[in-house]
Length: 186
Image 1: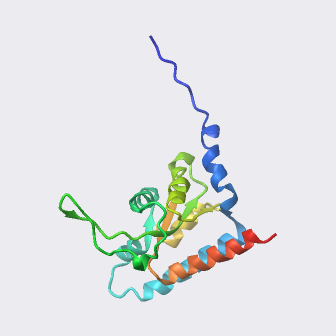
Image 2: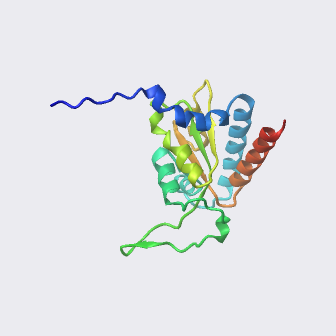
Image 3: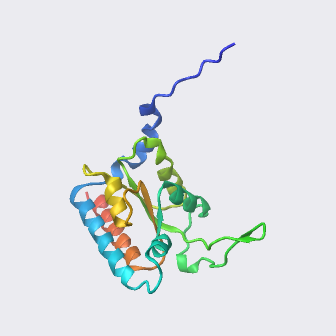
């Protein structure tokens, strides 16, 4: 006997994830403003990094790529409401091995030009369970290329900004406050 498999229509299977984030796209001048502020903040913060190599410093400030963002989100407890400074810096042990201390994400930036879409469709749902805002970058020039430019890689489909009380975090806070004010205006 042959089992008939129900073929899923990719357009229908992605509707739920697209509806969650469709209103949160960052385009045009807002996108240019956010990315230029982030690049300036990265340059300012790099000046104060000391002797730490750039690649290691970037990994301390950002979760770069879909896998890294997903990993950090999954390790975060559901709905973290505590301030990062209040969280324990003790590294948990699993079977005697020490893990790096948890640094929660402040925000996640996702490129909307991802193809196939299912590579990033789980991120908005996962982030919402952890109360992490998701900003979808949509640009004709390629959102993934522009996100990659922020963290000095060719392309990046997802970037998570780690909450570390730095210039980067202040920039993201300001943008999130401004976007909430605009969204709440009648």
